[in-house]
Each structure stands twice: as structure tokens, then as C-alpha cells.
Amino acid sequence: MIRLPDYISDHAVLSCLTGESDFDRILVNGIPVPVKDGCWSCSFENGDIVLQDADSRIELRNIRKGLVILAAGQSNMEWPVQDSLNQEEIIRRLSGRDISWIQVPRNLYPGHDCGETMVWTRLTADNLAQVSAVGVLAALEVAEHTDVPIGLVGCYKGGSSAASWVPESDLAQDPALEAYYVHAYWADIREQTDEEEDRRVAAFEQEVADYNRRFEAFDKAHSELTRAQKKDIVGHTPFPGPKGRKDFLRPAGLYVSMFSRLQGLKPDVLLWYQGEEDTRFALGYSSLLSMLLKRWRHDLDSPDLPVVIAQLPGYAEYDPVKDWGTVRLAQQAVADADGQCGLVCLLDAGDHENIHPQDKAIPGQRMGRMAARLLGLMDYQDGPRVRRRQGNTLWFDQMLENGEDHLEWQGSYGLENDPVILIRSAAGIPAFPFEDRNRED
Image (cartoon, rainbow, N blue to C red):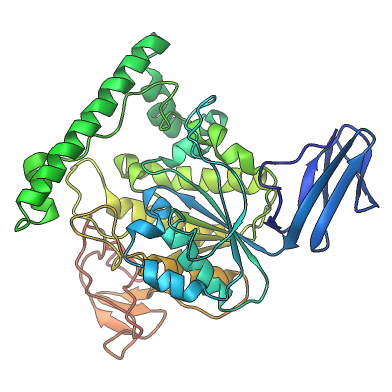
């Protein structure tokens, strides 16, 4: 019996064909392909494909070889086109582009059915409303530099920790991560029954619904106030929900219910926009992100997978526990140490009052251009980085907007939750954050 992963279906855009079989070989359009340890993988020609083994036959229609982009992370990657400020631009730029889309259903636990189906769709102005705005904007940037079809794969969930996207066995390899994300999570609910969890979930959903009604009414009645002022008065959206076996924030929760459906995908590039939720434990993020990249590359069967990391933008965080600056430094450290990562600076892409900026043009553009660079399609340089310092003089890796490649600076930069942008490149991109290290490197 031939078994295919969920992402291989009619109209797919793929980098390779892969699957399982109970026999020692299969036929792909009549050509023998060996099966090793129950698995097989092969290249293919565009068009209809017939797969056969000794007791099964599968017909696939319009399968095309292309460039596969995996867009992943939490809410700012999840944010859909219809709720962004970029819908008209995206529709205009999409004309004539060959981009197809598939969404991993956002099922939150085994047995949950969110109602989404995992099917490939050629993107048009009529069907992109629910597509990731950052993902499609990035794909459009890449499409400027290639004629091959692009397959855009969405795998994300708003509010998710990176710890939700890796197995518990991986978290157990780091004592600090295991203590924070595993032991502390389960400690106070080990005796919780399914009935108790269901009652708590229902009460939480009612709390959120009541809050949304209150905020909507207050929002309409007080247009003179900023969003931040309204939140200060009404309060912030209730989050997170109750812990338990149905909570997507449980360790490994989304790894099991979502990411596992992409085993063997072999994407050409990963776009990772996440970290807001993990500002709660910022000191652990470097280890956590490195762990996730290692695991995903292994499971995606792509050990050298290029990764574009979106560095967190600014946000006037109301929770004093959360540390956005340390997460930014962690993202930078992981990208620098990895060798296959490109980091994009988004300090100018935030919204002081809204953790979900509505304008996705900057992250989409920069992530797409960095992806194109990692794929060898174009030259691109993101924000300035400090390359040398002596006393209070910092030298950068590119020209700044002051016309020089250096400046006098004391202290750190860009590490506040919502920093003021004071250093930009000649092209206007903010400099990457840096720590105060008043010594010569």
C-alpha cells in the first residue's frame, strides 16, 4: 500500500515526491523507484503522475516542480491578507504570478477538527483573503527573481511558543527549558480531569467573548482615545487559556497536531516569524530556537535548509516580565552561529499600541528579499551591524544615513521593548540591536 503525506495532492507544487510503501519498490509513471525502510523519494516531471505498487494505485493531477517556501511562526505570520493594510497591493502584484498555497489545518490537539482542509490552491485575487500576508508578500518578492512556480506552505498558530513546535524529548535535553516549558506547565494540573479542563475552557471562551463585546462597545464610544489608552481602561485580551491536554501552548502540542503533517516536505526556504510569546522566558530563547531549527531540518529532510528569521519589532509591552530586547539578541546570536540563516531587522515594522501591526509590507519585503538572497537569486543586505568598536566609536558593515560607516555611541541600542530608532543604513533600514560593550573587539 502506497501512503502519501498530506501535502502531496492534486495541483501541488513540490521539490520532490516522497511517501511510504509496504513493498521494496514502487512505480512512478512506470519508472521503478526503490523503497528503503518503508520510505521512498524521487524527482518527477511536471504533469499528472501515477504511483503504483503491488496492491495500490494513486493518480495525482497537475503536480509541478517548483520552489517551496514554508511560512511558520505565530500571529504576525498568521495574520491574513484581509486583515492587513496590504490587500490591494497584494492583489495588484499577484497578477501574472504563479504562486500556489496550502495551509496546515490549525488543529490544536489530537482529535480536534478546526474545519480547515489541506488542499493546494493557485492564488488569485478571489481566494487569498485568509492567506498569511507576510508569507504571500515574501513569496511575491521571491517571484520577482524566478520563473519557476512557487509553493507557499503555511504552518503557524497565533500565540504559540517555540516550545509548542518541538517534541518534549528535545526540550528535555536542556534542563532550563525542560523546567520552564515542561515541568512548570504540568505541575499544577497533573490531576486535572478531562471534564475539569472542558469546564475551564468553556469559561475562558465565554470570558474572551464578553471581553470582545466590551472592548468593541468602548472602542466605538471613544474614538478620541488611542488603542493603548483603551486597553489601559478596558484591559487586555484574556490570554493564555487554561492549561491542559487541549491547550495548544502545552509542550510539543503543535509539533504533534500540526508540524508532523509536513514530515519530509523538503522546502527550499523557511520563513520564521515568532518569539513574542517566548519573551516570557527570554533567556531560554537562544537554546529553544536553535533546538527548533535542528528538529525541523531533520524532520523536513532538509539538513541545510536556509532559514529567514524575523527579528522582533518594537512594541510597548504592558507585561513587565516580558523582555523583547533579549529575544532580539537571541535571534541574532542563533542566526550568526547557524551559517544557514538570514536575519531581518524589523524595528521599524512594529506598532507601539498593537502587538499585531496591520501593515505587513516591511516584514514581507525584507523576509522575501533575504529568502531570495539565501536562494542565490539576488544580492541583498539588511540593516547595519556593528563589525568593530574601539572605545565609543562603532564601525558598521555598511554606510549609515549620515554618510559614514561609523559613529560615536555610548551604551546599548535597540534592546528596549519599544526602542526609538536612531541608527539607520543609507537605504533607511534600522541597525540591528547591540549590547553595551565598551571595549575593543
